[in-house]
Length: 488
Length: 94
Image (cartoon, each protein chain N blue to C red):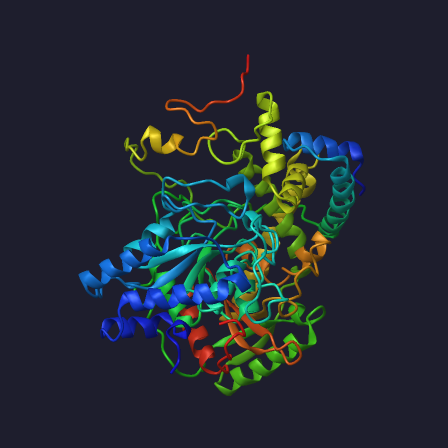
């Protein structure tokens, strides 16, 4: 019999609704799985107290199944970038090592209202700055498919945790690919919604015009369910989309892709894409054609400028957002400081890790007098060109199909010495955030040589999540189900 | 484009960071390389292109200006690095 922890949310929901299992059994199975796997993968920074979690489960069992709560009794994880009331929130940084927020992020409020059980806070690159979850003040997370490899980043703890069966879903954040890339590296579905779909209130800011929360799940249906819970306007975030999410978001239908045009951006397949990833995608495209998808070639001519554009803007926003960490009101304060200036400088220098300091430095530079126009404004102009590319492309097709990363998961330590090499990994993911569009990663198989998961992303138009999920759902049916990771 | 050691020091000062001399040297090299890469954008003519600072289509989202109490003083002061019942305490200024 398939173990509980390997099931999808929908399968667990069914078992709970028909009283075949109790919430306590579900939670216990996750806690046991964490016990079994956590020392190997290190997916969590903070786990909630076991007794507290079990009491919550017991209370739900006592109250009885509630069909109005879409995540009733479902154990989930949260990337440690979301504030949680009375539960430590670190952003994987020493500067927030002892921070206990007095409030829940809006996403967390909605998950709790939906009946989800939060197991804990998951590891990430410090302040979401990284692509491998190696930049954490609490140590790296390992990929459950192979412990010598990275799980991707920055939501790597969340991806590794869901893949290893520790929880049924996680909420991550995606600023330049941080949900989609770890989902691909760990063989999961990862959804980055349209910018503004989900409230950023309580999502600790890295780059505010890019950051967006979204789910990492085992199936497309689960992703739709998680989105339906967290999406929607919030008066506490003025960048939230005001129009409501489609009420039939969960009404995904099987069938072929007749009448659907899928665009392949020629620039994405020209160079730099690893052979085994290219091969997997090629096969997948053939399979799509078998279910009647029409494949068209499209062009995103400014692709080669995406990384530079993204990093200039994201670092500029980061340097400004991270000014708030000054050792005054919360977070780490350097004890040895003798005056106010020293308190600021030492708290920041000892509290922030290396990559965070590097990005603050670069961001400060591109915003400084004399360089603002040459870097920041210039990048914002190129951002417009990149957005125009997508508008043009999406006028010729319904969705864009793209790789997620040039390779499958890479080895731990392989790219930590050279920050620029690490940035270049994000070539296929950052453009989406520049344009604010939604995208979903779906796993399509294992790489022929690496035997590690390969994912593709399907990119949709502004606010087109419903159709995006529906198409991803149909595509999911033609992919072979992945085996279990070695640590699961 | 090459960043001088002095420029690295200046940026650190603006960002309120203190770098060891070893780190200054490392950042000088790394930031120079990264900025060199960013120069790529200069290949593009963006003369009449309107900058896009955010994909958010919202103009001003207004709400009623109503006073609401979210937190007690204790809740907010709880995370203060130097405990005090009434204030955030910082090193002496004057």
